Length: 331
Ligand code: UDP
Ligand code: MG
Image 1 (spheres, rainbow, N blue to C red):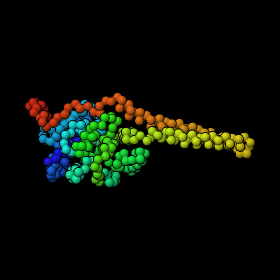
Image 2: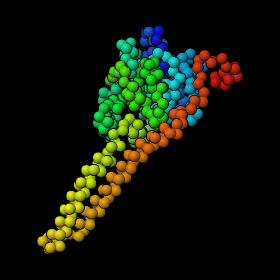
Image 3: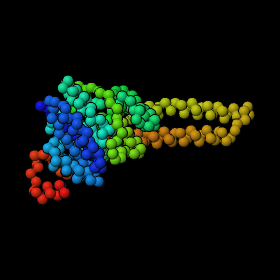
């Protein structure tokens, strides 16, 4: 029997957790040749998530509860789960049933075929709003084009199946400016995709608002690429040429106008010059922004703080508790 650990990062998921287990039990009971356990990572939840997890821990014999000291974010929570996993395979997924549990069967079939990285891939994004669909499409095209290679496969999220070897590789990376999506693609290995349709959230709310998504996109781009750093020098070289010719044409216009051949509209002329100045300043701010994001990644690496901090890690083998604590949980 091969073992599979399902890693579930959870932040305020008291409502989703019971629904998840109700659904997943129906699926895993029919899967042969693999035994499953669950690594629940409590990412500093503020609701009753931890209590729900503890209840599951005592009721079941396949649940491990890893608690982080505070809310670190979905990515660090996944890394925390990966860092403690010991099984032959790992599946990372959302606990809100957006990543369908039925796919676990397809993922383990791919493990049987010998794949190290199984990436469920959203065949269509019809369930998304037009805005999210378009911006997501632009994001994937940009990140993969700018680096000249596939940094992140299109339309994948943190739903992934990984072999022990793949997990060990990811755990061995020393850098701290990391994202699971980048790492899972970066390691290469025997990879395959399976199509799926992302479901609606079973309960609770998304933890990603627009601003968080925006920052997330920039973080993913900057940690997975280096080419944007060449953008300022390339654009700078081209625009120096362009501005030289613009200057020449302004000079010629001025000479012609002074000689009284044309009449010029002072307002339009001022507007054009001001536009050119503001355009120049905006491009400059944009480039400073690019450099700042990469600088931020260097800062994260030089600070070298841990990606996550584990407060407690409760395995099934630690279950011999004082009856007092057991009573507290049961009530
Ligand atoms: N999550 C987490 N820490 C966070 C935010 C989210 O562990 O700070 C978990 C969350 O509980 C869920 C998964 O990451 O299991 C994905 O989050 P969410 O469903 O909010 O993202 P969406 O599916 O909307 O992109
Ligand atoms: Mg979700």
